Length: 234
Image (cartoon, rainbow, N blue to C red):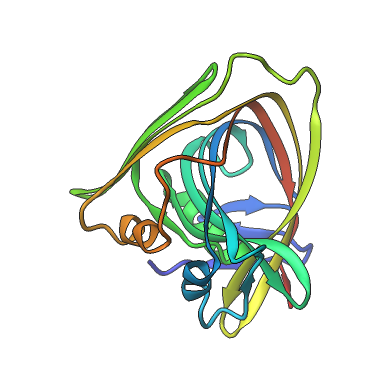
């Protein structure tokens, strides 16, 4: 897909006739995430040629599988599935997103153009409610994955702030995009099942990473809000 994003003099961008200003704000979303431990050498193979290295301890690194339901958002209402690895670039830790299927074209184009994110258009039957998140993800006629992520009933009774930098290789460089977030209504647990499709590249990549049957940790979050700043070339 050819994405046309027009930079404007005030630092904003025009995409599909809409003006996007920074920081881009996600006012309300719900999320469910399963965190796995995988072999660092398998993660390193996925990062080959990017200039990134996996963050590892004793030959292991983390793999995140997240389901996100965007409800109030500068880029529209849509669903998203993400796989990501913690990575090092020039001695600094960030989050490298491996796959980022979304259900709407506008956020696809904005994500690719502004931050270099690997968004592609999928069809997701995604639901996050209470302590459970579920999703069936397809691309065309290909089944990608079906995931169920659950947590214990008890919620953490306070808001948790956070910050991360998204790292996206593009044109021989790395785009670094700072994200500041707050989450509330967080539940944690250990329950997740993921059934992978037979032939889709995202499913194949998860197999190559050695996706375990059981997660290290799961989280289901009632409310996520975050701001995403412009990308900086490193």
